[in-house]
Length: 450
Image 1: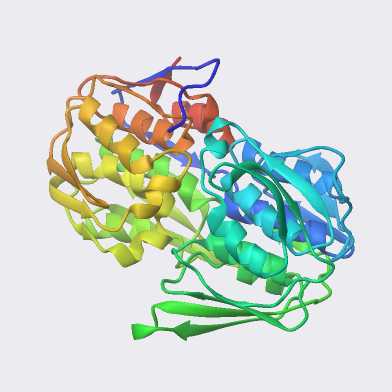
Image 2 (image 1 turned 90 degrees about the vertical axis):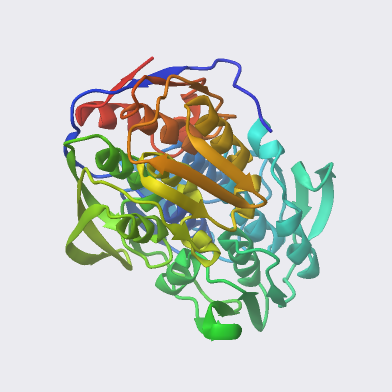
């Protein structure tokens, strides 16, 4: 597991007054990455509004530029990408350094792996610890050569793509939109049809955005009960630059949302939050727990449904979260565990294996944070069981973040409502996904100090 950064920035959250106000959470990270990547592969200009300007996405933008795209910032959240088209990329002069960006690096491996280009991928200590073999295995079947790799198929690694990729039918070994997306992106340069079969439906932003740019993508139910999906891409389309409006990220919205639920007397409105059914598992779960969350003004933006959410402090109760819900809320389990600590009764979160291969072993990191702040819990295999008594936990602990932005934000949210302040050992990496987190929470009335 990664350790603290060389220049850690500890932060302490303290209980205080109710949270009040309205905000628009940052642009969705998943869509921001894909806008840059598909802008690179398209012919003509792609104009993006609402781009998340966190470090992860900026690394993807820099990689797109290194591979030949024209990438220009026009103003806050406004960018233009002048693409090179499928097959038009050039070898980057330097290593593609993705920092902490797991999504950006894995999706771009799919792009490079399907094109006649050679590139080296690297990242920070956290990214170097994360498994890439699950991405490389299908790419090798498609003709990608892994020129070099660190132990266990990790970065730094170098890929050389073929003149044309080989179309395959691939059944993903885990519920992962990153694996699916990497294969589909490699399949853009394959003659014929590339098909990805997943046992549980994962976030479908890649499929939606490929269609937006002009690709032909067919999605059909698959497997028992139709819970899985078969995604078939017709290869070698001509992608055309287009306009992309990035909706607010439900994974980032999760932090002020849960804060409003657990800080007594709070009322917060979150504007323009994406309501994609494959991304709102946390909201579904919180509603089952008794959360007062009102969806208002539903509308379409950038091919996605968005809504404003009015959130009021609520008495929560423990629930069982089924494993099949995990793909729709995989990034939100740390902050759900915080909500569960304030609920009355037991909350069981089942099937959390994927948390072990995120920026940190998130399951282990969440458990350690709960323990440090006096919350009763058990880890039973890949299940996390949290016991609440309907009152604020003690708090008072220091949480090791392990370079994980979501661990840092989740436990800062906890500290806004515990009996004693909560400290995280490093908040520097929060900028990877939610650069304005601290001023946003302070504007709402939250007490978070360095």
